[in-house]
Image (cartoon, rainbow, N blue to C red):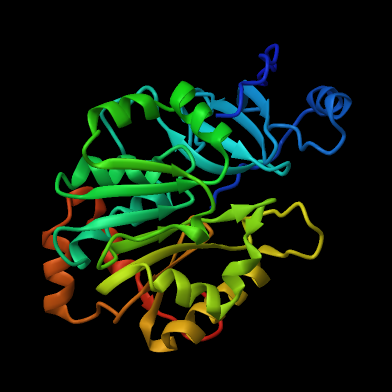
Amino acid sequence: MATLALPVVPAPLPSGPILRLRHTTTARTAVAAAARNPAVRPLPDELQLVADIRSPHNHIRVADVSPRAAGHPLAGARVLLLDEPGNIHSLIFPRRPHCSLTDTYFDAFATLPPLLPRPPSLAVLGFGAGSAARALLHFFPDVSVHGWEFDPAVLTVARDFFGLAELEEGNAARLFIHVGDALEAEAPPGGFGGALVDLFANGSVIPQLQEAGTWRRIGGMVARGGRMMVNCGGGCVEAEEEGRDGEAVKDATLRAMAMAFGEDMVSVMEVDESCVAMTGPPVTGPKEVAAWKERLPLELRHFVDMWKPYNGTSCE
């Protein structure tokens, strides 16, 4: 792989999960990054820094994965990095402007609408730069998305570097973005049809999601018969805080969900080392599986076969 030099960092923008990249940084890049901030993990060689922004809540970096990074699963992608370890929270493929898929767990999120009460409205708790919303709006023209993002600077970056402004303009009647604490989000009368939960802070699934009471409150936002899909993280997630092991946090999050909804009401799948969970009765019967697939685009149908009942101990 070619080593990419980091460009001059632009001035910070005003204020207004998860994937990981392998770190194969050269000594020269590591020394330069450490000189800027000893706490910041340097970027891998295959990334070119586009913007480096500090907000009161996040260290936000935008980077492009070299399209020449042979064999890299995200070659050609633009990624949103939050937290010092550099966890990826959103991505797009600028060279594929008409494709909303990411080849990550965000695509699995886009399979939820056919299982929801109609017409479906979804809450996206942890909006990021809108990767999940983009796929939902593309594949399901009757879906409305209500997103919550805690840090307004993340939304500013999303509009400037990830096409969120254009997504909002093209879906003004279906996309509604709120700045604030997702755990304090207000549901419409009757609740949302479903919810996507992707809440991370300091490189880890937020501690509140390891509490059954939090899940009961989030579940109260969802209409009768609705469901949630959740990014529970896993070993691929690297936290800033010592002792927040990704595997242990994932297991604690799943246990809290099972305690809140019942172990037989949680299903799991693993996508690129990230554990995704779904609430509601398992979809296992041949007729149910076939009906779900029939209402999905071909590109998403393989996810239906990946779900397994939660066994009380892991995501596998």
